[in-house]
Amino acid sequence: MLGSLFSDPLQLGIAQAAVTILLALAVVYVARRSEIHLARETVVSLLRGLVQVVAVGSILVLLFRGPSWSSVFVLLLMMLAAAVTSARRARDIPGALEVSFYGIVAGSGIVIAVMTALGAIDPRMESLIPVGSMVIASAMNSNALALERFRSELAANVGYVEAGLALGATPNRVVVPYVQAAVRAAMIPRIDTLRALGIVWIPGLMAGMILAGSDPVYAAIYQFVVIGMIYAAAGLTSLVSTLLIRGRAFSAAEQLVLGAPR
Amino acid sequence: MAGEAEPRDRTWQQHVLRTEHLTRVVDDRPLVSDVSIAVDRGEVVAIIGPSGGGKSSLLRLLNRLDEPTSGTVFLEGRDYREIAPCELRRHVGMLLQQPYLFPGSVAENLAFGPAAHGETLAAETIAELLEQVGLAGYADRDVSRLSGGEAQRVSLARTLANGPEILLLDEPTSALDEAAQLGVERLICNIIKQQQLTCLIVTHDREQAERMARRAIVMEGGRVVGLGPMSEI
Picture 1 (spheres, helix red, strand yellow):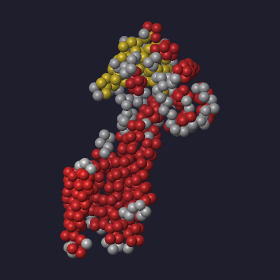
Picture 2 (spheres, rainbow over the protein chains, first blue to last red; picture 1 turned 120 degrees about the vertical axis):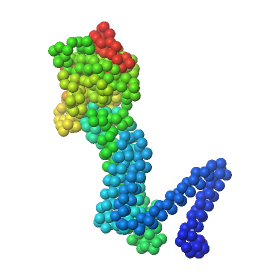
Picture 3 (cartoon, each protein chain N blue to C red; picture 1 turned 90 degrees about the vertical axis):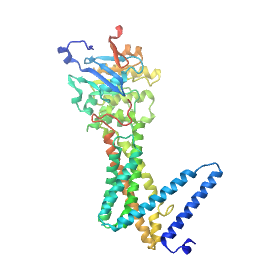
Picture 4 (tube, each protein chain N blue to C red; picture 1 turned 30 degrees about the horizontal axis):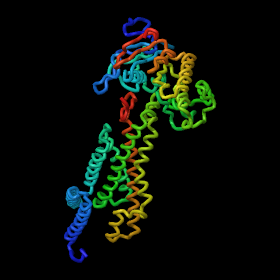
């Protein structure tokens, strides 16, 4: 219906956004009748989300006009932002920001670089940035999950860790089960994503490509490539981050400092 | 055992373990404060005193599970900061209040310490160790199926598998029921005697201290407030 009223894509977009906002406000109204007050948060979130996403769209328009090598800087900036966001969840872990940055750069950076070099993904900026952002976002989530799980495993198993140390084992040896648990926990959402792909969930990229007129089979295969990249980046990031944080959980004299009793 | 006042003569060199102004402060709170003690080879010393007096904190410093804020420990006259922590902990074995056995079999637990140093513990050695702690034939048993007393015996055998020269015992029987307590205590006494181990035992039970040790250190507020033969404490 909206498509027949608005021929200009920008006007159509604004109309679609307006309808979406109305829908959200209707939910606020229904909630209010049940004495659940969501009005303020919803309005602020809607406005914020709209401004952010339009700003990003505008920036992307400018970026796409720039040289292709500038995508490296854009991706690095995204990785830094991802590290800051991720490290906030592990604030009490010493060096969490540094570890998160290295983990995310190692995980998503290597995967994006290899796949681009092999020609598996389109190196043009308008393709690389959106695909890269998906990979980086996944690495960010995995990093936060891995760090949080490693910390909680150590806190729950202080006695076993110190029993191992007291027997003369190195910190790296005593934390093996906790490193495994952290990496596995960080990978569970990614594994479930792969399992449910196409059955429970038709991802946005594939849907977008089909809507844009691509061949559905090619769109599906390309989506699989991206999901595979997301999986690889998540695995590499969680592994690198956990191994790096492992070193910070102990002092130079091989004493447990993260979650240790005093 | 010698006190701080003992002159630094030739006898100091004979002490297998000596602390010098050992102190650990956490968040401005002294857990161990200016402790200077010495222990002779083959001696069994009890560390007694009220809860929160710094007994376990002192033991953790001796095994270097915690770092002293100031002061140090000498082992055979050598500053323990010069010894690699994993090597130090092999020679200064520590038995914790809880057994903390790793998931798996009894034999796997016994082999853990030597394996950490690239050594394989022979099946005969495992059998001997288990016999020493009164658990002959338990090698293949899963640790989840052990009673509290059995688990603590396995924990002791696991510590002994490293061949320590000094044994630190942190209330090793406090988590056990009364019957198991006496059994484990007797076992520890026999092993210490047989192997002529130097031993420091933290206990809140004065009677246990009298049964096991000839000398005692009394700690209160992180400080040594008494030091001498059990009969004089």
